[in-house]
Image (cartoon, rainbow over all chains, first blue to last red; front, side):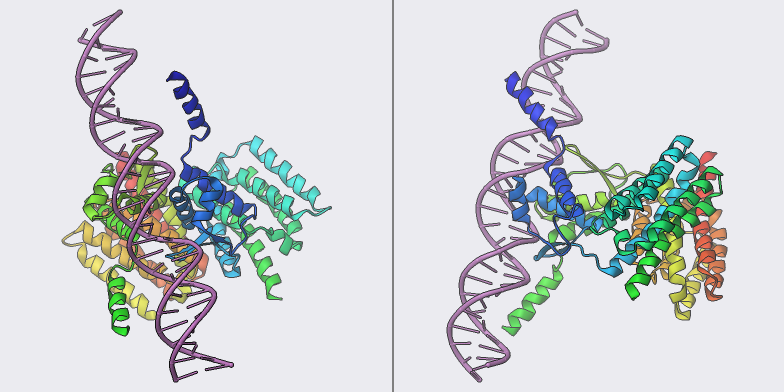
Length: 228
Length: 228
DNA sequence: TTCATAGTTATCGTATACGATTTCGTACCT
DNA sequence: AGGTACGAAATCGTATACGATAACTATGAA
C-alpha cells in the first residue's frame, strides 16, 4: 500500500491544486493568449471534455472569471468571453489609472535603488524597442516596468485591484500601442520622469498624480485616435 | 397559454434568481446582520440543509463571497467568516478611501440639487442622532449619505469597487462610530463641507481629496484609539 | 506523564444523472 | 409568402453519490 500511497501522493502533488483551480488557470490562459477571442462561447461540457474534468469544477472556474470581468455569464444561456467594447476599455483604463496611481504612490517609498535600476533597464529596452517597433513586446515590457513600481504596495487589496485591471487589459489581444503608435515614445519619456520622481523622494500626492496621468494620457491618446 | 405563461412567469419571478443566488443573498445577509459572526464556520452541508437546497449552489455562493472578501476559504477545510482583523480593517478603509474618493469626484458634476437636498436631510438626521447616540442607526445614515454622493458615478467598475468596500465594512457588526464616538461630530461637519464643495462646482481634484480625507480621518481616529 | 501513531469522523471535491430552460428549426395556418 | 405555434436539440442548474483530504481522538509505548 505504501507504493500506491507514495505514487498517488506524487500524482496529487503534481496536481496539488484543485481541478477548479486548474480549470480556472487553463481557461484564463486561453483567453489571455487569445485562443478564446472575445465573443467566443464557452460551453461548460466542451471545456470539461477538453480538460478531462467533469463540468462542476469548470463551472466554478467560469464563475471566478466572471467575477473578474473576463467573461460574461447569462443564466441558462452560457458564458462568452468579454469583448473589447470601447466603453469597457475606457472604464477599465480609468479604474486602473486610479488604483494603479494609488498603488504606485504607496509603493514608492519602499522601492530600493536596485528595483529602480531594474525598471530603468526595462525602460531602456523599451526605448530600443521603438526602432523596430514590436507592439506585443513593447506592451510586455511596459507591464514589467509598472510591476516594479507598484508591486511593493503594502496594501494587498489595492494591489489585487491593480492586477485585475491589468488582467482585463491583457485579454485585449492587440496591445494598446498597436492602436496608438505615437503614444509609445511619450510613454518612455514619462517613465523616466516617474523614476526620477520616485528617486527624489517626491511626496505621495505628486507621484500618484503622475502615475495616474501617465495612464490617463494613454487613454486620451486612444480616444483621440478612435474619434477620427 | 397566456394564463399559464403569466402564472408561471409570476412563479418564476418569485424564484426568478437561481438557488445559487438565493444562497448567496441569504448567507450574505446573515453575515451582514451579524447572525454569522467573524470566525463562524460555514459548513456547506449545514447551510444547504437550512435553506433546503443541495450543497452545490451553496458552494458556489460561498465562493462568490470569498471573491468579495467576506469569507475566507481553505481547501479541504472549509469557509469561515472573515474577521475584523485590525490590519484588514486598515486595508479595507484605505482602499475604500481611494475608490470612494474617485467615485465621488466623478459623480459630483452629475448630482442634481434634489439629491444634494436629500443628502443634506440625511446629514441633518445624523446631527440629531448625535444627542441620543445610536451607533447602528448613525452608521446606516452615514451609508445613505455617501450613497447619494457616489451613486451617480458613471464608471460602473469603480462603483462596484465602492460597493464591495462598503460590504466588507458592513460585515463588521459593531459600527466604527461605536469604537470612535468622538469622530461622529466631526464627520457630520465634514459632510456639510463636502456638500458645499459639490454645490459650488469645485474641481474634481479638490472633491476627491476631500472625500478621501474624510474617510482617512475616520481611519486615523480609529488607529489613534486602537493604539492606546 | 507525554509523545507518537493509527483509526475514526467530519467535511470538502468531483463525477454522474436528471430536470429545467432556452434556442433554433420546422410545419402548419392565415 | 409571412408569421405563429409546436417540437426537438443544446445547454445550463441542481441533486445525489462517492472518493479524497484534513482534523480529531484514543491507544500504546517510552
